Length: 393
Ligand code: AMP
Ligand code: ZN
Image (cartoon, rainbow, N blue to C red):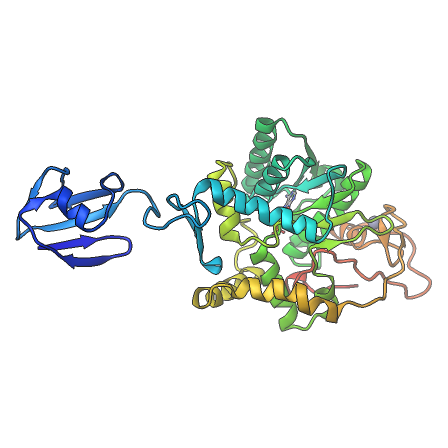
């Protein structure tokens, strides 16, 4: 008789006219982990099968066929690049270990530091907040309302509920209320792309909020996929200055708080699995304005390579950090001074955010400069030029 085994699919020939129990024993299967099916009918251990029967045996524990690398229990998450699978408990341990390793390797912050985690309501940043709370760090969340309709409302709600559930503090800044414009308006009126002005606003508000509330460091939820896609984009264009600054930690400078990315060793799949297994309610939908953007295409390209050779993404980005980054680093540091409008650090008279804002609101920033002095943008989170949207003044 034929027995069809599932996950992985295969067929074996065995003798019939005996009990289900005996067949399972022969195939070395635990009766508590499989369903035995004949013609849409479930069979019990003591049921008889005959020579002409076609029987299907289906595992019930997802991944039950694969064992956890750490404890040998039934695995629930498989990580192909590590050639490993983990059960729930060991996977959560793995994620925390990767974060601890990142924090230590780059001396991101210590137990005394006050950490501000920028939370978007997505899996990465909420997962990061969760891990850091769990590890006992002094962390506060920061949510920036970007005014992107229902997407922003939903994200804010999710971030508030997370904070409430854990009795953690969430700071909120609303772009429109505080600075007079929202992201959709900025995209229509400004000379930068929507994603560019959104990124600029985030960097500006994160830094300013951290300084004003006395935080030592700002942490964002950028994961391995984000970093690999950005590095790919910057490399395709040989944006050497952006490449040089793409690092998991950016040290503090005058008027600029330290920035860190503790999830850079974890893939998007890992952060999603972490959030799911920790039962974190997160916003699954993507920003509606981001559709088709360049960064997503780079992620798609990296995933294509990864599918054929697991580990490509990690080799590309983590390999860059180890061996590539030192080749790009330059000693030069731009001389900073205070923006004449808002006081934040800039290389020119007005910072990039104030210039973008004035343009969006149709305001003048003061008398035209006597010399042809223009600010070089202090882009910290480094984006590929195409998204970045040209338009340096
Ligand atoms: P993104 O630029 O959307 O890929 O997000 C990268 C990181 O920026 C996230 O992991 C968050 O840490 C942070 N972030 C994005 N959007 C927001 C937001 N609206 N408020 C606060 N932090 C955000
Ligand atoms: Zn300014």
